[in-house]
Length: 462
Image (cartoon, rainbow, N blue to C red):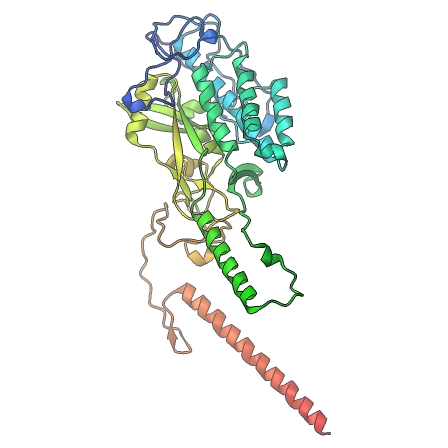
């Protein structure tokens, strides 16, 4: 982690809000910000939103809980700005870190529910919430899988409401009620999606990943009839028809999966944080940060919500559409502070049962963090489809990959001739050679069998 940059304390105009981006109101229609009041802990959402000129927060001080170095494999950052001088920037910075820590508690809850070792990576590297009530919730969620409680929607919803309630009752809570419910709803939708599950990705060092569950094909009970019993012709035809219908159903499940609940909540960071490196200096995880320019200013944002359980790949099967207008409206609503907005995923291509759900995060992430073999910034061993060893995809030639095409190099045309077939590509040459070798092996086997047969006939003659 880079060392803290020295910054001069500047004078900022009074900021009227801590947050905006109301889920139920589109940003394009104009979202009013939540008020910065002297009694924010007692503030509740009402049908009318009023903006107040704020002062200093007397009862919204937050002392971040710094972890020991090396906890969760991450080095901690000494963060500047958490002091008694409640300037707007320090308040916004505290709020952003607290939102990240609160969001992480839901990741830990769903990791416990799905039975994985580690939750998604932390978005705040300096703030972590540890409460006895949360530990009890996690423990209860670990015992829900594969029981009747797993199907009890009200029970699961109530458990995540307890996570929210734990944050709501915290003495140092800065998060307005509206944002508490926004994150709660995001993860409730995710836990109720029965088609997806979290798993550990060993190839990513034990990092969590989101997968489509293996769908059990629906078969008639006749398919499980003992094979020792003779079947009539009509029974055999019925079985074949049922198998065909089952395969069609499986293909339909593969093509049209339910990705509801897989959503990002984008949060803007204070405008004083100039870029992703700056965000890292202030204790945020740069892997989840991205930049957007609007009105000649750079705004740094964080990707939060259950959607960040989806790992990055430069050859992805889902994506989320973030229109420039939506992002610009979000930046305007933030007014240099913290604001949030939902963005949903869309399925881009076929996803098989049991396959990992992967998205393209950003060019920045692809360049500095991604190690997949498809990115244009990476050194992958080959660009030939025959050499693709990915366990997740059947390469669809109609899908345009994200890496740039390499310039074509004029080569002398291959003139190898095998069985009268002119070879024009390396992959065709390999496949043809495999067929020739296979034919040669078959011919050799036939010769051997003929030799054995001939010898046997001769021995019989004797």
